[in-house]
Length: 373
Image 1 (cartoon, helix red, strand yellow):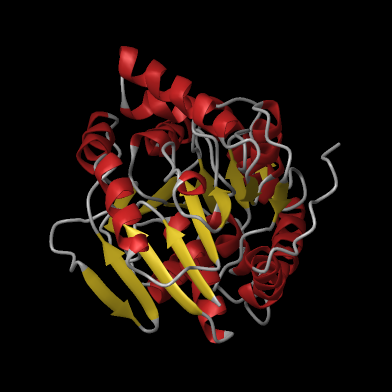
Image 2: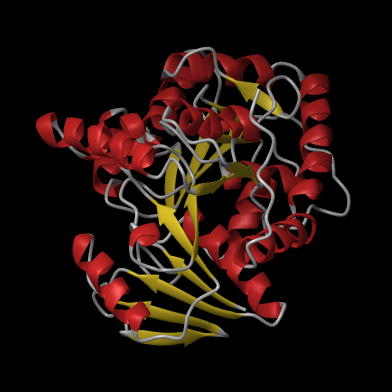
């Protein structure tokens, strides 16, 4: 069969993140099953118009509305696709109205307040308004997402056919866990694109709070993005140059070593489709402390695989870190539970189910899931 993914970014886009990583995982699994797989994405400076990435045919053209028109023109020149996956990131591709084939809408999170992280005033309000209207327009289209919180938001906007499929990770859980005493300085990590909606500054401010409360900490910030200059200036203004280290993007092996060596992964995002790096850290035997944000409250099980802070503030985040840093036995329980759970989210466990469902949608034989409670 022939599958097409419509997504803003492809794996080589400099802004590619977790959404592209999981998207590639699904498409490669379909390719390995013998299907023909294409990926249409926005153009970017230096990106070839067409490229083969080890069996994934990538096409790049246009941006935003221009890319939608370009995708439509390109599809008309291709043999019919059995399934088009229309991925939403605030603005979808409107494939149900021009593709003439089976379409599933794939969404990681309803952006909602994230619009205000990137835009101000009327633009932010318009972005939120049009997102709600567009999802309502798609209400008769079958949706696919990973988090129950996203499903509930879609239901509130009128969508009824929603398939839940968890994300998978390539990171294999460590074969055994070595001891990790809670000595100081406490080693903390953030792994993220450095963008406003990720609120990395909250993790940095939490370090200042912890130091002021007498707990020595070190924070490694792994990743790159537009917010890096702002975050470096914040680090300087808080006199944390000796405690906060920016590594930039790291190869997977180096990233895994940071996660394995850290005592805790911190996640302070405004909203997540899930939080892949939570499971990646868990696979390395590292629990998490996260904000009570949609998505993160599902990837981290409070008081089992980590802690969810009471509030979305640096002080509350610091409270949770300090609470755990004083209790080695509790910390060890979290490590064990997080490590064991991470194994259930490896691609080996997720992809067969996901591919079976995508094939059934392509063949027009997928059954609608039971209505959400």
